[in-house]
Image (cartoon, rainbow, N blue to C red):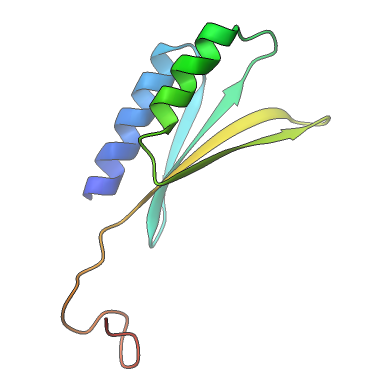
Length: 92
């Protein structure tokens, strides 16, 4: 598992420990974590949740009247700094 997957799994485990159902997905350039946020979560729990997702490269909250609230976090995969990254024209 890439380092991003390990970090995403650690974030998911911590969110699960706080009582949030989570799922982790691997993508080409990042690993993502999504967690369903229940109604009535306390302010203290929100602070703990924000401390956890602050370890990600990006995070946010999607709230809709149909699907409730979904917290998401993204951990980017490390890109090699030399060599042929993504083919011709994509070198760094």
